[in-house]
Image 1 (tube, rainbow, N blue to C red):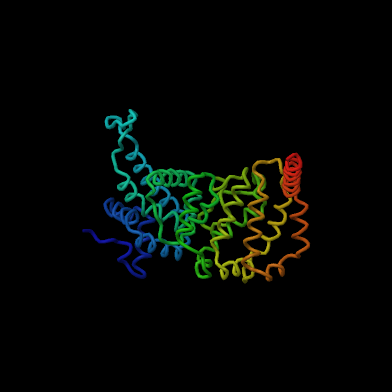
Image 2: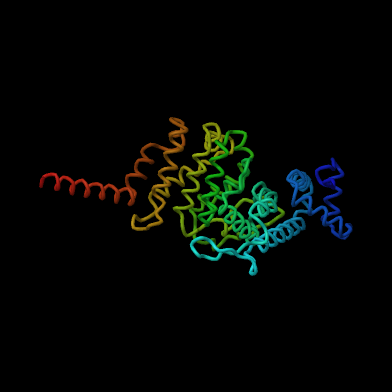
Length: 345
């Protein structure tokens, strides 16, 4: 059995190995393949690689190209092998002919387990539309067999709570719940991706960014979700994802989010604005998930919540919302109908 090259190197040796890997021309063909194989199959190698990468910012642009190329190649080969073979099929009892793929679901998951974990652990990789699409395809396929499980609170899991694909969102919700509450220590590990998600809320989940460059720059930290990572035309689904995120925070994490040194103070105002933004006739009206966000935060922070916004301000935002008024009118009409029926009896 061969020895991993990344996770068995130490200190300066890892940095030198990364520089050689980045240069490419300094490596023999079989050595480059071996280094890529280690990253494809050993999660510890992946962690060592990314840790070393952080110390060498000058290499980030080239490494981004190598990372996306390596992962796209891996995902595309697995997807091709998972397709039903034309010459292999079997007949089910109901008479339907079902194709048999070249690899089993277990082999498919084994091939993509480490690459998917890498993308979830380092979600800036999802900024690549092509790689993001391949990851979505992989998660959806694994969901058919209920097979992909996670054991760490990787930031990519929480980012996918707002993904446009319903199957991916459902998987992310299940994964987040299975991992339990996000505590304060977890929060600081996840803070950067939470900030990206909340930044979209601050922008009021626009349908487009006419004056903003949303392309990803691999030489800088990811600060904004790329348009393919959420549905800008469906703010209701986005707020549902934010609500699910908030329900996963424990009291200390919520405290850090809204009352800590780097608090997201603007989010509470964004919630109030969103409560009164939409017309009730819109089936994608985010009022109820936004109101649920409001209640989750209030329930967790208690009286400290009112130190951030005025109670009267919150009451007006809710009571003057067209959606809230429409719901009250609907309840009133139903009540009158029941009263009329009761009187007839």
